[in-house]
Amino acid sequence: MEAGCEAGRLFFIGHRECGQELYPALCAAVEQHIVEWGAAEFWVGNYGGFDRLAARALLAAKQRRPEIKLYLLLAWHPCRRAVELPKGFDGSIYPPGMERVPPRAAILRANRYAVDNARWLIAAVWRPASNARDLVEYALRRAGGPRVTLLRR
Image 1 (cartoon, helix red, strand yellow):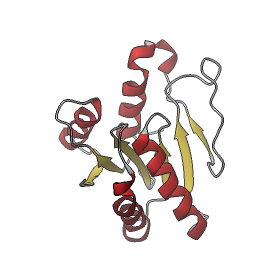
Image 2 (spheres, one colour; image 1 turned 180 degrees about the horizontal axis):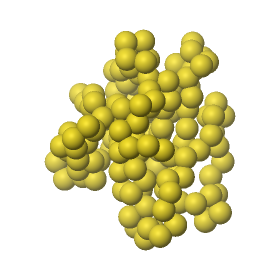
Image 3 (cartoon, rainbow, N blue to C red; image 1 turned 45 degrees about the horizontal axis):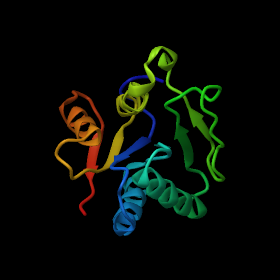
């Protein structure tokens, strides 16, 4: 996948303990990205509360807009850590070069790859010291990086 992606690709990042209270704002943000900006491909992780909330919002959006594509971002090779593709997903993404990444750093590296290859980022971060916040700050600093939408608690 090319850096500075020209496709309408969107990635999500947030805290694992994210609760249901963000669901309405998340659904509204997803809809806005589809309708106003042309987002058509969505990457979501599989490791925490915000990932589950994002997948739920996307599956609901896909009911109304079946043309959008939903991909599961994998931090570990499927042979190393089997993951069943959730119903409604169109496939999975395993970033290149990940087999050389230490397991402790796998989620961080996969998330950075996703940010580097997305046009948009929807984020739910509020804790000052977290990998999710660091990734959002990286995206905001990166020249030509994704447009960032921050959801508020």
